[in-house]
Structures are given as C-alpha cells and as structure tokens.
Picture 1 (cartoon, rainbow, N blue to C red):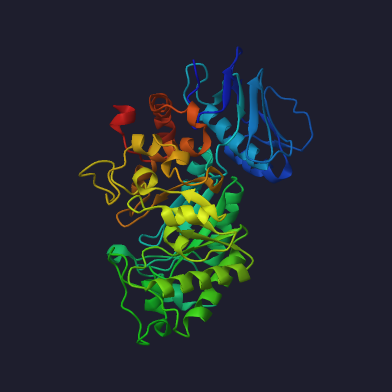
Picture 2 (picture 1 turned 180 degrees about the vertical axis):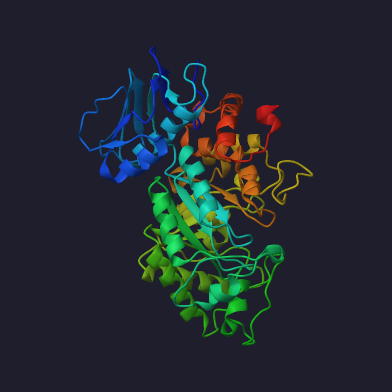
Length: 473
C-alpha cells in the first residue's frame, strides 16, 4: 500500500519489515543547529553529534552538504536515517513527522513504517503570505501557521504587516506607528502589533523549521495606517481618520512630500535590522489614483531605499512597469490582468513568484455562499488550487524566471485561528504539492486520497478545516 505523504515524494518505496517505534527511549543524533528542534518535533532525546545510539530505536540526521532542499530517508529495523543539506534535513523532518503521526494500516500513530524515500523540490520558493494588518494575528497564531508550513515543505512565510487598517510592526524610529495605528483593525477590533522582540522571536522560530520570513511594508498605496499615525505624511498636514473598512485603492503617499523619503528610510532601515533574510517586500499594488510617472518614481525610490539597507526588493506585479533592479523579485497575483509587463521584466532578468488569485488566494470562498472569504478572483476549491502547472500559467514567462509559488491569505473576513486554518486546509496542502512535486507525478484523485488521511492529524493538532466534498465527499 502506498503511503499518503503530502507532498508526494519524488521516489518512495515501502519495504518489508516492522515499523520503527518512536518513544522517549528513542535516541536522536543530529547536527547541533538542528538537534533541539528535531528533539522537540519528534519527542525524543538528543545524543551528542557523531555518537552511535544504543537503544531500541534511533533517529539519525546526517548533513551531507547538498543544496536545493533534497533529502533521502530510510526507515527499517528500528533506525530512521535522514540525509541531506540543512534545507533537506528540515524537509525530511516534516516527512518523518507525517510518517509518525498518520494512522496507517502498516504503522499506527507513533510508529514509522519501513520505507525508502528520495525527494527533491521542484521550486526553491514555496511560500505562504498571511495578512495580519486587516485582522491582527499574534505570535502564537503565527507559530501554529509555521508548524503547518513545516509539515508540508513550505519554506517562505511572507507577512503583510501594514495596510489601511493597521500597522503591525514596531519601528523604533517611528514609535507612533504602533502607538496609534497598532490599535486599529478591520471591523473596529482592538488590533495589536508585533514588538521587535516578538518579530525577532518569530523569525528564529521559523528559521528553526527551515522557513525564511519576508516582511512586507506596503507602499505607496494601502497606507492609511501610516497617514493616520503621522500627520506630516498627508498633503494637508492633518492626520487621516482611522480606517476600519475593507475598501482598497483610496490611500497613497506622495513622492513630492518632503516627509515621505525620510519616513521610508526610517521604517525600512528598522525592518531590515530585524530581518536576516534577503528580501524586504515593499508592496506596490492597487495604487489607483497615482499617475504613471509618479508611480514609477516611487517604486524606484522604494527599491533604492531597500538597496541601501543591504537587502533585495520583492514587489507585487504592478511594479513591473517601473525600472527594477536586477535582484528584484516580482509577485504575480492578479488573475484578471495581462501579465505582459511581468513577462517583459522577466525577459530582462527579473525573477517571478506565482500567486495567481484564481488558484492560490486562499481567502477566496470555497463556493458561493461560503461564510468566509471573498470571490473577486472566483471561487477556489481544493481542485482549483491543485490542478495547474506553474510553468504553464503564463506561458510567455521564461521558465527560468519562475522561482516558485506562494499562496496568499488576506484577512478582511478572517478574524480567528479557526477561520485562518479553515481557509488554509485542505488547500494549503494542495499548494504545497504544486510547489514541491514534479508536474508529471501529480494527480488530483491520488492527492485527494492521500490528504484525506491527514484529517485526523489536523484534528489532533487542533486545526479546523473545510471538509471539501472534492476531498472528503
């Protein structure tokens, strides 16, 4: 019987033999940087690196220095061995956690079936964007999202930290942003924000699970929270009223305002100091009331500010019309727009992450009348998130420019942890397989059969989910 792993591995061969029992008597050998996390995930004690465990069962993680996220896993005769580079070992741990926690005929929960796996990711960027600006989600909620991502091989958490409704990241240079606009939220809720310590801890928590955090401060639109907190950013010199609605496209900073450039310098310099990764996302979407020349100038200013921090810019697809630096990463999202400008930028060397709304915007309703979500991009059921080929979505895009896939969850209608996980599952598992597994290996009916086996795991871990009739019907 095939094992119901998600994403489907490149090669998987169940073998004869009794399952390996993982328990407090199991010993773990792992590189020092991974040992504490692996011990916490597996619930087994750590033995010093290089030792030979003398126990009824053992888990051994071996760093072979390879790059790209590939790994191999073998389980037999009381021993589980995972081999790969750092990224591969993280992914192998996620696979091992599934093998242990899924209730399988050949290996009940707590045991690992005899198996050999060799696995490689299709794309290097396998992401999820969470909007914590419309409705605020704090550290505990985001850690639960990170745990889910790690289980399914996603490796980039993109946090949308600012919007019209609230400013969610402490900026020491501009404390009024969170003092004032950290307290507002869509629908009039109490809001909240991440302190610098919160954010640093979250970045570390993600890194321990092989996940990079890309923070986003969205400019020059989606900025009412900044205009509310800092009067000088307004042309009138007076603070904008707070916004608790969900309309878009009405707010913008102005390039010729003398307060704008120093403000951008301050907030992106502060953000860069908290961010060990390569990218800062600068937004650039839905700036409907700004002329083309001013918009292009603003994007050029944003990318220059990011470059001065030593980071690279990531931007929403609209920014492709501006002159972008060679290290820019463009996020294609709007299913209703011609991707021509993004194709043109890619032909000049830009890299692209695919986030098409009609496929991977996980805030879209599952079906008409669903109590959560929107449907501007259509209704997005699990099959819609699964049955597409990223390299065929925009055929004119050079294949070498497409570096990955990123799901997105906007929170205009999402206010609780159960709302969040209900919109993520089971679609996030589908996106994870699109991003990891080779196109020729993927089949929706096979995926649905495998992901059904994960329902018990989700319930045990406290994740609400949508019982999609395409999966569970």
